[in-house]
Length: 173
Image (cartoon, rainbow, N blue to C red; front, side, top):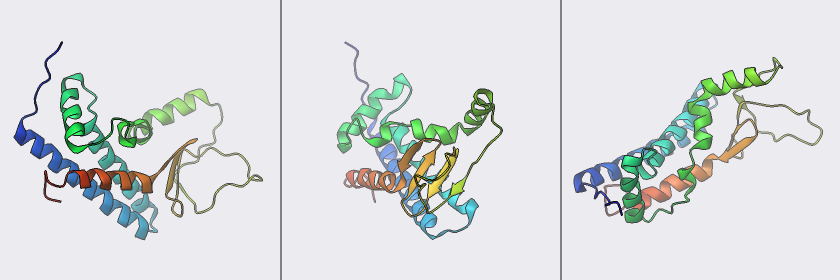
């Protein structure tokens, strides 16, 4: 049986501090998102939320095998469930690897139709023509979509804030 590498206490403190910082960045970006009507600010805030959530995810669920013990120890210490929504970075990857998604889209679709960066308060109706928006955001419902996948940004923020609360006692909030 492989020996579990114990996390250095100073590294543990630094990583928990980074979780707190990233959750605060995401929360400030969400506040900016709620106030903004400028398209670039909206997408910049969304991107900031996704990056911060990914940074917390990478600390708690590292991709590299050599750091997995660290993630497990921190999740246990903080009481974060293994199946927390932040453990899945699939949706975030659509935004981080958008360049690949564009190229794949045009390689696989013969249509030249390309609609992106939609900000719309209205949900499609049954009478709407089917459309594929690559990235879209509904500021009323806080739903962010990539093609046919969606995530609730309010839930992402609530999850991050919940993880930050679990850091209480280990770091200054």
